[in-house]
Image (tube, rainbow over all chains, first blue to last red; front, top):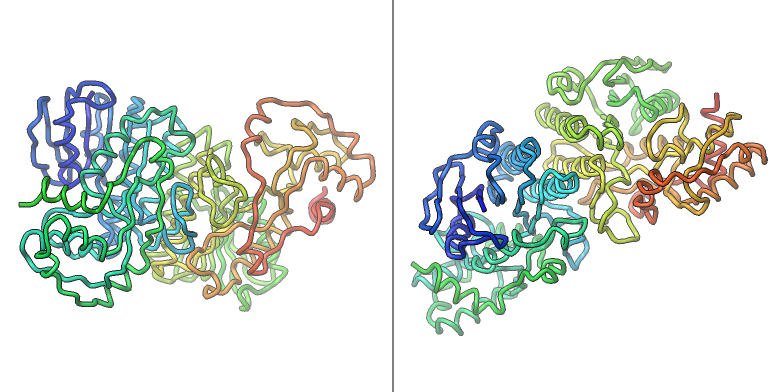
Length: 319
Length: 319
């Protein structure tokens, strides 16, 4: 089993690589090779099988051809320009999120090796006039270019699969929380930072009210689901290879109460409640009444409680 | 009002051009120039305003740049590789239907002139796991590459509009019947030929049973709707610029009965009922429980009866 993770230098790519190293198998077959590819050299990981790192610019077909070889059995296509970046730089979003995805799929078509391709889409494809509740069969009416590019990626994954060029699976990821690392400027940043910074003993700002609801998944569960996603039998996937990855809807108040239950009353006192109208304007359009029927039927799961999200952060990620 | 019809040599493009010539205005403004562009030189039409013809290969950005100038106010983007062609030649379908659409939209973005763009999508975007009844907010799960490429075009029209690069409108065309011209090899060919050939005094073969249902619109109504589509006020279009164009669901038996009512009992006797399992297999996956709520609310209409479809053919198209 020869695996390629495109976007192997990112948070999900690195965690996925470590999980694969721990498991040693994928799709019931021992892993013989793992390649982590990214726009910059990904950090190597320790594994009981050979791990290579490679630079790959998916916007460049030649770079894709050098990275995606006929030896690859499973491709995780995680690389993307994130939401706010794609909104600010339309060209960058199109070239990475749309044409990068196309370049990888075209390379597979030319190779004729029909690899399993696991593609990460996003709940950003929901929006606009799409009607609640949202899920596998909702109309994609994204209100960001990132969401539009992911929605297009989904259609490509389905059509390349239908044509027999790949064995594709696409999962709409919930917002990941608690996300480790540094605060960033993403509008969703507070959905991790109001927990992560206090758990690390630092102050954080909550720009929305405690009743703000959103749809979340822990990094650990996301990785579990991405591995299950590759393991799924094509025969069980039907005519639509795209599905919502399970998450759960929580309010900010519930998330903070879960933190207090797990870590005591201290962290919550480090949160400054400072309404930020610009952030509120963006995230108030985000959707949360989301349901993952197909993925749940296929055995993918969400976190049991937000207490678990907190525990996973403390166990897996707290510096 | 300077109008460009890309796909101006095709059935819809030519009929649209003649209707614009007759009307003399679009969006309430006198037409001062009409350009018909197509991969081959389109036939010129008579009009009370200047009409130019141009060769344009939308797969080639330089050709698009030469055709789409900053003088254009309204672009009809009708050019496409049809369903069976795109299914047989994946590259051709992608380069015209996906990248051709992208090239036109990108040209608009670069120009910065924000033209009205009227894009023809198709009921081919429905299929697979999409749940009946189908309409504006159905999940696009196309089972042809043509349908996938049109579904991607819809998403691009919405995002380029949201970003302010164009003022886009996309309409999912029903199957057009009665379509004039020669029989073709398309799986849908019989949906016109079993009426057209008998009305022309020739024999035709019906490959499906009389209870086969599908969703139809006459060429005349399609043109009316494409003109109304350009006339629509952006403020009335909401967050989703994509909509089903109204059509009506008829069985083959109803269509033939309508022909008999309008043209007498003779034509129906020219139909040979010869089941063709290969055609049946393809068209049995096609969807017909389709509803055009938004377009109807905005004033677009379907034919009043299939008798009208027959009459329109006899008036407009019978040789």
